[in-house]
Length: 262
Length: 288
Figure 1 (cartoon, chains in turn red, cyan):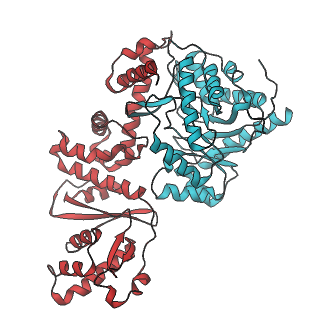
Figure 2 (tube, chains in turn red, cyan):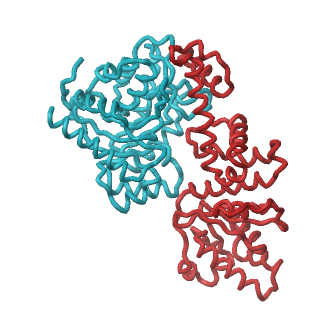
């Protein structure tokens, strides 16, 4: 390995991320431009490029904070979480964590939740492909298969629990309508994110659906899901409700495989 | 200085493959390309954009590939870096190549990060014999892993190092010879760096071995007076067109593409710009 080259690259890196001037000693100045100005072209590009990446992944957050505050947030995030992966696809993945743990943003907890929502869309956009199961696939099942039936979900399917009504803010941003004030959600909402036919989608889950879907995503079988529904439904209504939820999941394109335990 | 038309052969003596005139495949134009199947000879795709598990990018990549030849162009190889080569990246690059079977794979003669941190920029190298050896060794590793020659592209730069021992074109040529790799000759980058460093762009052009040049890039840039930045957000300027004509006269037929990455115009404007590249190319090559 070339030690002198590594030292040069380290010095250049330190200039870009921390403003250390040592690299300028190795760089030619010209009449039109001193070395420090030349080096600053790279530094400026670094910070502005990464803020732009964040703005692409978090457009609603940028819209709500405004460009100046978003840039301040972006710069703080870049300093805290420098990019370590070749692809910019993953650069913004820790922004929700950063917002939830750093002042002044920590004091506005809905910002972290909005960031989590926008990152969920990014994940759904980029998730792997999988064939989905249709209603006719499930009609082919024998009656005795039903109690042990479990489901594999499309790789894009994910749920988020939200304590603030950020979906309303996100929607308002998308529709360019006035933003509603951040309000607490009581009870908390569970929002489902997925991709179907190449379009990323979301849906606020009904109160009884959220725990059932989460259990199903963890591999619980149909009998177990029905028991869970019995907590919130009369016994005679359970089967109907379970069938209606399953139908919805299939129509939404959430399920990519049916697993029977025989 | 030679302005004569050199034979279109490669370093191995085989005829240089000529794909014609291409554009970059960008998301803004996916639908229009599929709906209209425009008269573009080939597309260059940014490799990293398709190193994802699934979704729209790969869907459109596969659909467009059904109709057009493609080449892969990367920005993350960090061939001049001092961290070990990123095996995960190389594996994904190889997988993508298996998926779309590109005519060739290119990246940049630069470094992009150090100590595990990525600057996501094309950082310039010092032009020394030691760097030539360092880069050539890494190119050989990459070519062995991919099982094919790669193309390296000259980058635009805004700094030059005091301890450089040679010109950029001598460095570029020495790396290509030592590594036995091919060259992606970015004509706009030659212009940009010539302005920024005060060298003669034609000296660069006549200083690289024609038999190693496999592809041209053309692009626009932003001119700040004292310096020029390679922004790919404007039409190609006349001085770059003139350098393109001289490049064609010198190198012969070389697959040419136009890069546009920002301030995206209607697709038709890019087609017109590509038509200009095609007409100039045909005129020069017929006269040769």
